[in-house]
Every structure is written in C-alpha cells, then in structure tokens.
Image 1 (cartoon, rainbow, N blue to C red):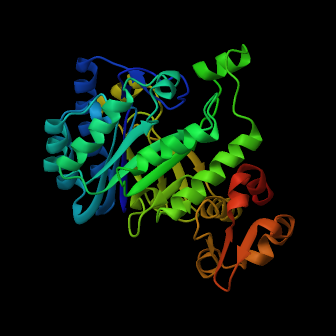
Image 2: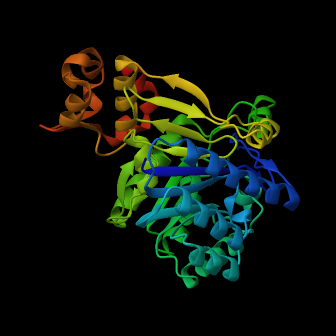
Length: 377
C-alpha cells in the first residue's frame, strides 16, 4: 500500500458550485470527527494483512485547514505508528484562504505537512464573490506569502476559469497575478454546473448562464499555452507542474495504484486481481455508528474483471501526458493495446499521438476528453 487519502467534510460555508461531500459544522463537530478519523485509522491498520508503508498522504475536503496544527500532528503521528510514513513521503493538505495564518502554517510544517494546495480560485474580488468564496483577493495573496514564510516550498494554487461574464482579458489578468507567486504547481478547473448544487438551480432558473463552448475552449487553450511559456509542464488535463513537482498522490490515482482511504465520503482502490474500488459512505451518522461498533465502514463499489480493468486503465492514462504505456499495458493485461481498442483508436486517430512505447491524446483531444473517451468504454 503506497498512499492514504483522508477526507475532511467540513467547510466554513458551502460554495454554490460545489458537489463534494461537505457541510458547515461547529468546532465541537470537527473535534469529534478528528477522534473518529483516529479510530478509523486504527481499525484499518489492524485489518491489513501486512504493514503499509506510505509514499503519499493527502488531506482533502471540504476544508482540511479548519483542523488545528496539533490535530494534524496527532493524526500524522498515529498514521506513522499504524502504517509507517516514509521519510520522503509527500504530505499534502488542501487549504482555503480565510482559514489560515502564519502561526497555523508554521504548525502544519512542524507537524510534517510538506505540500500545500491553496484554493485560490481567483484573484479578482468580483469573481470570488460570484463563487461564494469566504476570502478576498488580498487575503488570498496574504495566505500565499504566509505559506512561503512558514517554509512551504511545494505549493499548488487552484484557479477556476469559464466563469460567468469572464472574458479573455480578465482571465489573463487572473493567471498573470497568480504566477507572480511562482507556485510549483497549478490546477485549473473550468466551472461546471453540477446537479444538486445551488449553481445548477440558478442555471435552470435562468439566473446564471454557463460559459459558451467556444469561449471555454479559447480560455483553456490560452491557459495551456501561457503556462507552457512560463515553464510549466501540462502533465494532466487540469494540472501543470514545474520540473519534478508533479503531485505524486494524484499520480497514484491516474496510474491505478493502491490507495487507502479514511473518513466519511472517502474513496480508495486496491490493486489486487483486476482491482477493487470502495468507499466510505458520505453519511456522518452511519460513519460514527460503525466506528463505535468497531467495524470498518467501507463498502465495495466495484470489483473489476479483465475487460473493466483495461477500460479504466485507459480512461485514467489518457488524462495524462504520459498516456498509455504500451509495454506496461501488455504486462498487466497480456494483450496488445492496439488490437483490443482498434476500433476506438481508429475513430479518434486525429487526436492520438503514438510512439513505440506510448499512446496519448493531444491538447485538442483533452478539450473534448469526455466525448472521446466514450469510444474506449
């Protein structure tokens, strides 16, 4: 087992576009949840056939930075005792401006956190208000500076694009302002209107109009070229990194490797036979009930057969600039990629780039990834 994900489903407020499992909670609820996480860690570690050694740990949410530095230290010490954290492990915490200060960030570093992912989303106050964020642009800037001062030398900054009423000029100002801080990693997300969110309801009522497809494509391509020019590698559909600064944890997902998961709403994967995906239900009451009974709260989502495993491998690999490793594909599945998916490859050959050992999508293919990947599924 190489990686561990921990879900912290609490936020200061619920963003109107967010469909992740999260809720606004009290400090008492958050403290109680930390105790449940620790119980979850103990139960999972006791159930492993052999001790795990962790290369990556990722605290996602929600807003994990609502936890205190001592709570992170407590959790990480327990993880080390239960699984063993490798000395070179990447330990990431997602954080939001408005929940941070210099003292807290120094505490995170002292606890062992060595990678910070900041949900900046925009450095334009009007856009931040539209997105329902709790922070201002100036507070976002202060948080980045504080993170550097605290000793973080591996920082990801999230930026959203395709916002209502956003034009190319305002987007250029936003990305230029973001890059002034020289982040090691940038994640870009086009705004989507997910079912069940406030934004979806506002779209259906005519209060909000999504960005048009042509403008979306123009903005995505602009960001791609701009970040390449600034020395970033576009290594996954939504992710850019400076040299040797890819997110190791996320690559575990895209490479279909083992990942344990802790916390209500968390998802994990076990790479045995053709693979098993499982989750912990996004139900706080059930989560607490099962843990207090001494039970592992996981539920199996899917056990893959040979065909399903091949399809998911391709689905994930084509999200990345590495694409499908042809030798690895043959080693895993004992079949030839080009023979198994000959029809799909023919249909989308315009967007595929092949060599002797890899097959990947070009940037135009990434733009219509959801449509193209259906040929493989």
